Image 1 (cartoon, rainbow, N blue to C red):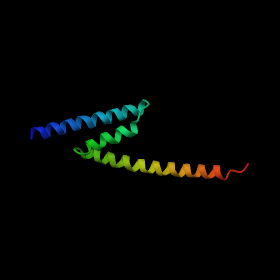
Image 2 (image 1 turned 90 degrees about the vertical axis):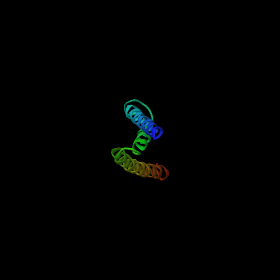
Image 3 (image 1 turned 30 degrees about the vertical axis):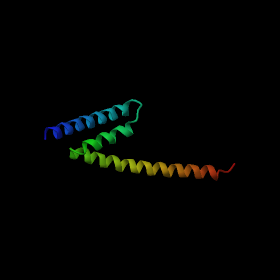
Image 4 (image 1 turned 60 degrees about the vertical axis):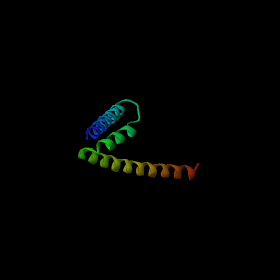
Amino acid sequence: MLLTRIKTQLLMILGWFLLAIGVIFILLPGPAILFIPLGLGILSLEYTFAKRWLRKYQRYSGEAARKMDDWFTRERFKRVFKRN
């Protein structure tokens, strides 16, 4: 029982730490896109708000990835069929 509580508390501390690092990396150059979902994923084991935020993050990330794919496809198509 005590070991489980300690383990849970350590995971929550790690989750908050990773989330804080991710937020700091938004302002400073760094891999915020890695730390924020890691922190939210760990926190979502215990907190429902983190689960909601993680779902929103996944949805927005998916939309952004699709937009980037479309943009790269259009740009590549323009380069291939570019007229001089």
